[in-house]
Amino acid sequence: MKRFLMGASLALALGSAHAADIVDTAKSAGSFNTLVTAVQAADLVDTLKGPGPFTVFAPTDEAFAKIPKDQLDALLKDKAGLTKVLTYHVVAGKVMAADVKPGQVPTVQGSPLTVSVKDGKVMVDGANVVQTDINTDNGVIHVIDAVIMPK
Image 1: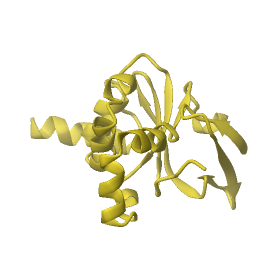
Image 2: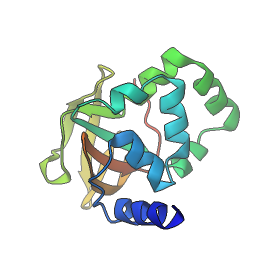
Image 3: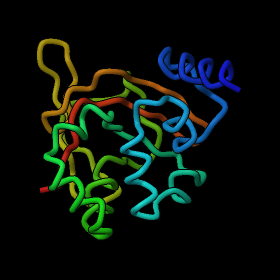
């Protein structure tokens, strides 16, 4: 079992995970524990395990750690607020890095997020995209280094 999990984490790190949905891929990576907890608290697991396809800008545990603990704890207890924040990280459809263009992108939450490119680096509402194109059975994950908040 340990060998399988290490292999799944390695596949995710290399951007080649193909055998799981968005939630299971995030779980197996080991660096999205807070995101998975938040998705569970907001009752979005079934949605993100659904057919999609979805593009998820996924904040790492380090990204969530930038939020003061009392604020994060309060957000995790506010299901409506948490749902707004999480669905702001999701775009309908499968958008690969090569297809991303600067500008406004509509989110599942309803508010657009802003994609920009500066010095060859892609940013989403000021968060750096640190890894792209992690394929899943129902979409794609792009890893970001901050939690982005809807306006």
